[in-house]
Image (cartoon, rainbow, N blue to C red):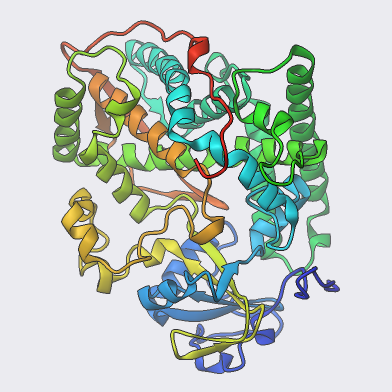
Length: 501
């Protein structure tokens, strides 16, 4: 690939580590490197992240790997990761699988290069959509979708069937972001198979990852044609959604209304129609794929640790009491359940890594020189297992690691499930509220029964998800019954505020 320069003077496209790390040879690498192919012995094409975790345990807190003509520096040590979090010296690097998604979402919030103006424009316009007032407006719709999930699980339980946890969490989170953000209903729980939007989304994520495992995209011609079809379907779906909103008039002040109608508070600029499409796809994909994985991992651990599930369930019963529909403020009071979610995200962050690049020539952690534009991939999933931070039992599931005293005793920048800095996930509070609410509702209603023969397998498609996870359910005796939650009344619409809210 021939690199072209960005407005910031840095090349676009993949930049191999030799271009930015003057003392690269000092960084450990796997011992058996093959000419032309690189460090591919024993490598998994479908699970590159888990491959990297294996190398990390053997090679230490910073190492490098070469695949074909691509040399990549990985790091996970706490001191190195903390230095990378310094926003004055480092910024987000859009590379690897993230850059491969640009044909799908272009300069959307997640994939925009740092120099592209639409990132700041969209961020400032959309940030008020995640204010506390806006979140309280989304809460009734989250309850409504959760009720549809529980209706589905009640039917499966009555029929004596186990439930498909990742599949059902994907349905739940897709409907939640579609309803709260864009006033759309995909009808996921009325379908026996995944919605075609989900199928197309998984296709594009998988293709983006596969591009990193081949020396040339020409080797994926058939997959590229399927990917083009998937992209066309995503675009068509979103164009129809936007067209319906434009024809029908404003919604309830949701994210789509903000994208279409809200001008930047300082410049007065509006998002272009093309950028609106890119942002909608970004939110539909990122807004449900990551949260569904977080919920699935949490349910796996709750099913394997009945004593932890019992403690979380007791907290739900105490905090929510006999309230049929818990209020917005009651969710944040589930502090132990939030710790369960955090511990699940510690062991398996659904976005398992993030990339950072040097703004100027610098010295990483006082030891490794980096030229401007040099980048590294921070292995979040391994940072979260660093025994110097989390102890010798770092692989053990223990929500009490997130007790306030324990959190205060740990170094900064050692827990990063949502990335870091200015480009961290804009919807993290939305995701945490949704996930805590759903886990609370499910714990209050069901006892979970895991299959003793199941061993956690993790599938990778840029994000992480438990593979083949099914749970048996038993209805709790005396659980609170609540009616289906109706659409939020008009006084819960989300008015537009300034970006500082």
